[in-house]
Image (tube, rainbow, N blue to C red; front, side, top):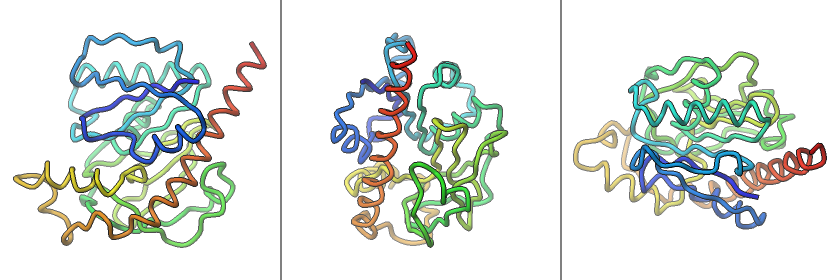
Length: 237
């Protein structure tokens, strides 16, 4: 099995998702269209698609983001699993016909999310309860795509996670980040970026242990879902 990963900067990597993929014996390949917009890759050979975050906006009109949206639609039409994080979730929402716009506030740092009723029966979020503190870094949000289930919300941003159908997930928050990734983002942003708008100092390790535990559970379940979807496709072929 192979997963294609659209990355939008060198520091927006899979993080804990890579650990889950390795544990389940799933290979992955990065595609950096932001750096190599003419890059070709074997889309039809990938069993699933992951889209990472990035500082750009879906609404910037960047040609490579248009290509990614087209590939999202292709994967969805083929019934293949798709997972998007932050910008990746916004790209999925856009591909499904929803709008992406500025959020009333920027969420930067560790903030709680709450699970909505639909999460109780969701294949990757079932059993989670109570507010959970996760890492955020975004200034935009998306409308919920038609027919999608809203799984999580926060005080500052209603649409934090959704599932469309049974194989497409969008997460606005950054469950994948390691402390090292957070520290790197803060260094990159320190001079003139969004970090100045954070509510307070950002400690990369503040909730790292619980976040890693949650990531292991959620992304491990997503990998199991991916393998189940692949088995089903193989059985029908």
